[in-house]
Image: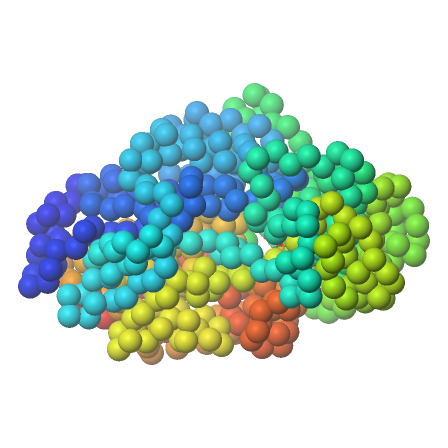
Length: 550
Ligand code: NA7
C-alpha cells in the first residue's frame, strides 16, 4: 500500500504549519533501519537522523576484540524479507561484530536505505509544539528539523558509563570505554593493558586481549557467572537447512519467553533425579549459546534452592577450568545465583586466567585509589599500563533519552518524568509526549532484541497508518493506561529472581547518581515475549486502547 502523505499529512495537519518531514526516525541501528524500510515502502516522507558517522548502532560502536552476538545469528537477523533471508549466509553461529556490521550494510545497500539517512546528525533536543502538534528537533550543529512524528531507535545500551576515579584525565596513554574502542587498528602486541569491569563485555574481550597483549591486568569488583558460548562455523549445508527452516525458527522465537529457539525444560526440577539434572546440565554446558540458561529448568529462574544447586554445578565447572584454586574462587560469584543477571557467554574466559600474562586484581581486597599519568594505583601499590580499557557498562534504557533534552506537553521534561525510572505505555509510548513512539525503548519485552524490535516497528507503522487514515493530528498515551502498564511491568519483576538483580535490568549502575542498588527502575517487561506481543497486538486490535487521538 502506498500512502499519499501529501494528502494524508495535509488532512491530518489541517490548520497546522507544514513540517520538514512527516516522520523522523532517530538512530540508524537495527531498529531504525527496519523502520525506515517500512516507511519507504509506504511512500512516506521520512528521514533517519543518525548521530554517528555511519549506520549500525550497537554494531557500529562495539568494536572491542571478541565483540559478537550471544544470540544465534539466524535468530537475530531480520525476518521480514525472504530475499534477504535467502541471500545472506551467516558465517558463524554467533556472528562477530565485523560480520554483523557487514550484514547491516548489506541490508542498507540492498534496500537503498542510505538515501534516507542523514549521518552526523545528533539530536540534542526536541520539543513538542502543542499548537501545531508537531516536534521541533534541534541538532548538535544548531540546525532545526520539524516533523509530525518522531520514532526513536536510540538503542538500549548506547550510553557508556565510566567509573568516577580520581586522576582519570591524567592518564597519558589511550584510555577508553569498550563502546568507544577505536575504529582504527589498535596495536596490543607488547602492551600492558588494564581492563576495569568483568561484565558481559569484558568477558568477551579479556580472552582476546590476553592473546595479544604483553600483560593484561583485570580489575574485578564483582565476578559474573559465565558459561561457554560454544560457537562454530556455519557450513553451506547448514545454512541451506536454516534457510529452509526460517519460518519455523522465527515462529518458535515468537513463542518462547526470551525470543530464542531455546525454551525451558518443563519436566520440573524436583520431579527428576539429581542424576537427570546433571545429565541435562552436562549436555547444556557443552551446547551452544543461551541453552545453559534458557533450556534449563524453569525453577532456576524462580526458586532459590533450585538456583543454588545449579549455581554450585557451574561453580564446579569453573573450578575445573582455572588452575589456581584461590583464583577460581575469586571468579565465582558469591552474592547472586546463576542467571539472575543476564548471563555472559564466553570463549576461553576462565582459561585466560591460566596464562602467565594475565593477572586478576580483586578490588574488594585492594580497591583502586586513583589513576596516575602512567597507570593505576590500588591500596596495594601502583601498576604501570600503556592502555586502560573501561568495560564498566551503560546508562541502560533511559540514558539515550536523558541525554536529549525532550520537552513534552506543558513544558514537562522526559528526564524529569523518568527521574525515578521509566514510565511508558507498553514500552512504546509516553503519556504527555505525543506523536512519539519508541521502537527500542524501556519496558519492551526482555528478549532476543530484534525479535521485539520488529513487532515494535510494525506496531508503530500501523499506528501511523491509523493516524493518516483517520485524519488525526495527534496521539498520546493515556496516563491511566500508562499506570496500569507500570503495575504489570513491576509485577513481572516480582515473579522472577532476576527482579532483584544488581544489574542494568533493575537500573543499577554504581557510576550514576540515583541508580543505586535497591532503587529498582523497571527497565524491561519480564513477563515473556509472547505475553508482551499479545498485549501490544490486543491494544492495536482494540483501536489503540489506552491511546487518545485528536
Ligand atoms: P555490565 O554488565 O553493566 O558490566 C559492567 C562491569 O563493570 C561490571 O563488572 C561492574 O562491576 C563493572 N564496574 C562498573 N563500574 C565500576 C567501577 N567504578 N569500578 C569497578 N568496576 C566497575 O556491562 P557490560 O558492557 O559488560 O554488558 C552489558 C550488556 O552488553 C550485556 O549484558 C549484554 O547484553 C551486552 P559491578 O558488577 O557493578 O560490581
